[in-house]
Amino acid sequence: MFKKFVPNFSNELRDPRYFQILFLGSFLFVGINYLGWNSESIKYLVTFLVAIITQLTFSFKTTQRYSSIKSALITALGLCLLLKTGNIWVTALASFVAIASKFLIKSNGKHIFNPANIGIILAILITGNAWVSPGQWGSSTLLWFLIGACGFTMILKVNRLDTTIVFLLVFGGLLYCRQVIYLGWETEVWLHKVNNGTLLLFSFFMITDPMTIPNHKRARIIWASLLALLLFVSSNYFYIQTAAIWLLFLISPFTPMFDKYFSAPKYKWNVDHRTQKLPNKI
Image 1 (cartoon, rainbow, N blue to C red):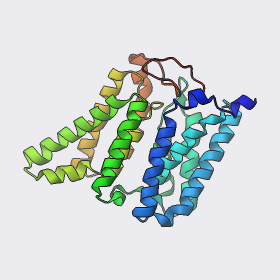
Image 2: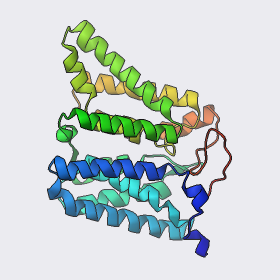
Image 3: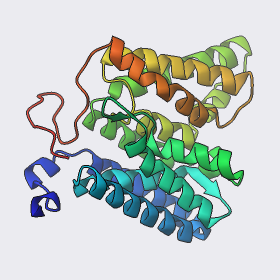
Image 4: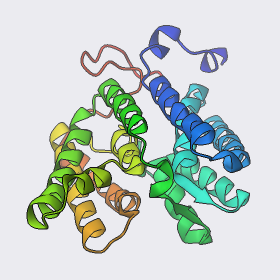
């Protein structure tokens, strides 16, 4: 029983979730200290408390592996970075839904929805007092470099580089063809569009969640291309600024179908996926 609370440190050092917590935590630090998010501090605290309590409760009732608290911290950080609301109870609801969905909405032992994504979507739909603010990141070049560099390191750790590269190439390429080649706009307009902080976080940290995207590399390429195409159409022809968040929610239920037709091992935390040496301990 005690071993469930004490991690195997040789395995823990290989867990990429520590890197994700560090990177997302640094973005939140920048937001609070340099972008004026101080007024949200109490909501951030509630987000973390509800996420941790919910994770521990469900873990006690199911797997009894409490080191999975790392995943709850990542989800809480994602909610803090993306979700905006005027009420603390909405924050608590989003956090609870996000964590609970991992245990309640599953297919073949794999949760279907990205936890932070479904928490944001249901908070918006249920309360009408929640939203995502793509412009909250400002236009600092240093911030984009930080997100890009940290995100690149993270996706290398989880071996999901293909997903981000394909998504950005397809979306960025289509956008360039329309704005620069077809409409004749300045390249700076295109750069401003693709240098959106919410889009970069979405590309590097949300759609690379190995537990909710297709297992097979070929399936991930198709999945990412489809997501990028839909985002291009919805944001440029229907002017839905937060389309990425909604599209990920809508496309996620198709992941089990991709996993069925493109067979590949399910991702396991604490495994070096270049060698596949370690068993899943979390």
